[in-house]
Image (cartoon, rainbow, N blue to C red; front, side, top):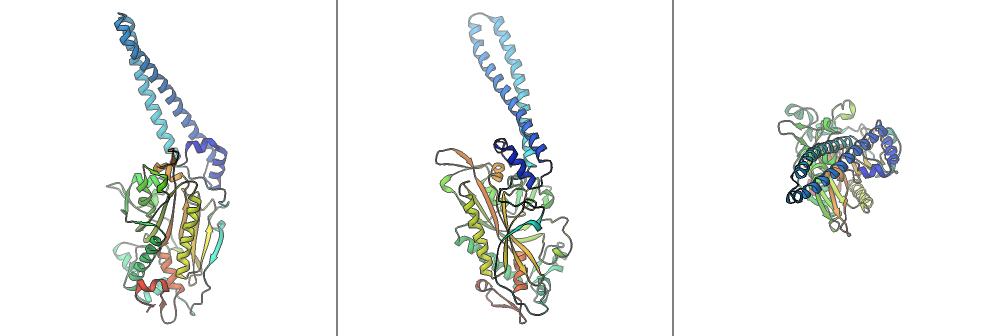
Length: 424
C-alpha cells in the first residue's frame, strides 16, 4: 500500500497517478486518508503529553508524602488516575484511527510510473517489441482444442465430469508436454540464478493482504471458508510472503526466487469464445519469478526479468510481442507492467502468457519487507515478479503453431524432456 510519507510528499502527483489508473474519487479518498492521519497524530500527541504529565506527577507524589503534604499527594494521585483514564481513551482513539487509515489505504491502488501510458483498456496498451518467425501452417489448420482431441492429449469433458469447466485432464503426451515445459522453465530459471522454492498452494488471509490480492481480488480467489484459507492465484503470493515482517541486509539483495505451482482462479464473469479450450482455466500450472531488491537496482532487475522471459519464447520459437500496459489495464498493485503475448495462427489472435511487474514499495509496505542499508538505515524493499511462464496458452500456441500434416512438431529445446520429435 502507499505510505503516508509518499502521499504527504507529493499529494498531487499521487492523485494524478491514481486518476491514470481510473481510480474513482481519488482526491476525496486521499483527503480522507490525510484527515484520518491528522486525527491519529492529534490523539498520539495528546497521549504523549498526558503520559509525560503522569510520569512527572507520579515522581512527585513520593516527595509530597515525605514532606507530610498528604492532601496534596492525594490530589496528585487523583489527577494521575484521571490522566490514566484519559490516556486509555486517547490510546483507543489512536488505534482506531490507525486501523481506519490502514483499511482506507488497502482500497487505494499503487501509483503507476510516469512511463505508464494513458489509456482505458487493453486496446490502449503500447506494443514495444515484436519477435519470432512467420508461421506457415497446413491448410485448414486446427485450433488447439481440436488438436488435443485428435491426438488424445487433453480431455476437457473428463475435467468437467470430475470437477467442472476450466479443469482439463492432460493425458499421455499431453501430460508429458506439461512436465517438459515445467522442467525446461525451471532449468532456465536456475541457470539464470534463481533459487527454486516449493511453497504451499494455500495461504492465509495475511498473505493475501501482503501481496494485494486481498481485498481487491477476493471474489476471484477460491476460499476455504472453514479454515479461512485461500487457494493461490499465483506463486507470487506465498513466495513474496516469505519475506513478510523480515529485515534483510542490503548485501543479500537482490533475492531471486522461482517456483512451480498449480494456480487457481475463479475467473468469475468470464464467458464466450475467448475462454474456449486452454484460453482461460480455473486451474493451471505456472512457473513464477520473484525478486526482492533495493529501490536503486529494481529497474535493472525488471529489465533482466523481461530479458529472461523473452529468451524463453525465442527458444520455443514462438511469435511474440511485448506490451507496456496502460493505466486502465495495469493491475491494482503494479507500478509498471509488461505483458508478453504469443500469436496463435489457428485462432488468429494474441494470447497473453506472462506479466512482468515492478511493484515499487507498494507490496513491501503491506508486507513490512525491509532492508538495512550500508548506513544501517531501515528502508522498504522493492518487489517484482513475472510469469516464466504460464503453461496453458503456451501449450495452446505450441500445438497450433507447430502442427503439420504428419503431426505436431516438438520444439528442439523440449525434445530432450519429451523424448520425441513429433506428437502423432
